[in-house]
Image 1 (cartoon, one colour):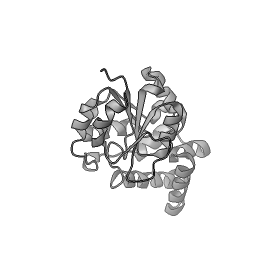
Image 2: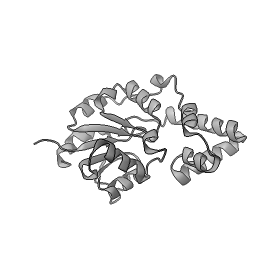
Image 3: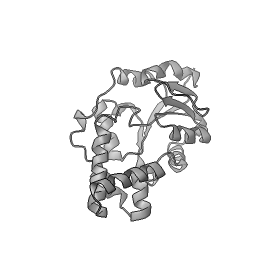
Length: 214
């Protein structure tokens, strides 16, 4: 039987663990950016960064709405990871697991394109994806805003009902399910909400789910 579904993967904390090294690096860079461009001390900049992230799902959104920040300048300044290869640790078996999955595979990330491509290259899996749909493609409206999802569907000429979203963030999966996508939550023993179709502990479990989702 032909597999007629499209896999849509989040990047950070889904295809790799960004929490130990990359996220702290980016958070420090964002705090420094706010200090420099808004004239804040470190404590105030860190507090404002966190506030915008909690309120809008992305610090950038708050900066664009309230400070007229140029998103391209911000993203390049805060995602300048020249040593990214040393920050990324591929999960053993990740490449073979993704290679075994039938169907098209896309990356849908709130990160900028240059960063997403660098991470995928460092993971050694860039060639397994048909496209990287980054924050630039969403008009800088990050997930869980439905705007980016709809633009992804249109660009790739797919219906939401033929797509499988693999994510670590519940808010993004809630939007995906509302639009009609199948949802897989990369979680660790937490209670599963109704808009999640399947919960897995690691991506190595995906191949056994593939045909149940077709």
